[in-house]
Length: 68
Image (cartoon, rainbow, N blue to C red; front, side):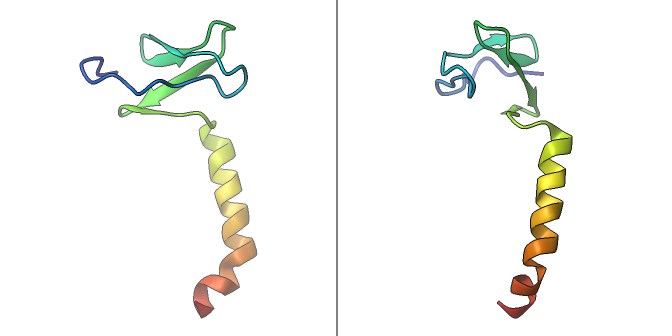
């Protein structure tokens, strides 16, 4: 549930740069892009894309993690 008693700082749509407004459990721009809010945190990256990128970085830089 989105807590509207503690408003977000001004957020803008990453695609259009226009302000985002609250709409139920998400933030939306005037052009129709919507971003979910999970546990009070706006999510601008799809969950599957984020996890895939993290996994690719982990595999690529794993030797640096062990030697640092």
